Image: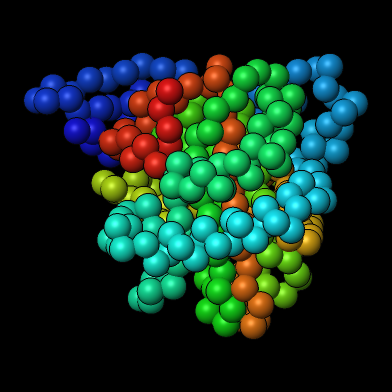
Length: 308
C-alpha cells in the first residue's frame, strides 16, 4: 500500500509491505504542494513531431481543435442506446465504473466505456481520434481512460475548472503532458446545456495545486462539482482568464473536440431541458508510460488509468 505524502520536489514515498521506499525522481511538474502553488511554462512541447506543425498549427497555438461529423447519425444513435442500456444494466449496479450525481440515481459518468461496449469502441475507432492523437504526440498511442459523460436535462452537474494532466500526473504517475483527449458529442452541444468551456492557450502553463491527496480520493473527486484537491485556486484561474479568455465549444451530435492534456477547461451545470452526452477518451503516448503516482498515493484503478 502507498502512503499519501508531500515529500517535496523529486521525492516520492511509497509503502510496500512494512518498508517505506524513497524514490528519487526528476519531477518537472511537482504539484499537490503545501506552500503557495505557482504557475510556470511547461518544459515539454505541445506537438511532439515537428513535421506536424503546419497540419496541427491551431492545436499547438490554442490547445484544442474541433472537427464536424466524425460519426454519422446511425453511429450516434447506437452509442446513445448503449448509454441507456449500461445505465440500467443489473450486473453493473453498484459497479464503481458507474458514477452517479451526488445524492441521486442520475448517471454522471460511465468509465471504461470502450471495454464495456463494443458499439462505443467501434465508434471511437471510426472517429479517427487515435490517428490524430498519434500525429500530435509523435508516437503510437494507447487508451489511458475512456468514459461517457452525461448531463441530463434540468439536473446535470458541473465540472469545475481543471487541467486533466495535473491529476494524471499526481494520482496516476503520468510523467509528461504527452496525452490528448477526444470528446465526441452524442447530442447537440449548445451554449445552454453545459458544453465544454476552454481557455485557449492555457495549455502552455502548468498550474500547481495545493493540498495532499487522501487515500482513494477518486471516490470523492469524481462526484464533487468542486473537488477540494487537484484544482487550481481562484486567483490562478482568474489570471489565466485575463490572459486567454474563455471559448465555449459547441457542435452538433457526431462532432469531436480534441484537446491537450494540460488545457484548462470546465463545463457548467445543465438546467436546460436538453440533455448532453459525450464520449470522452484519452490517448497517451506509448513513450509516456505511467510510473508510480507522484503524489505518493496508491495507483488508481485500471478503469481510471490503464497501465501498459
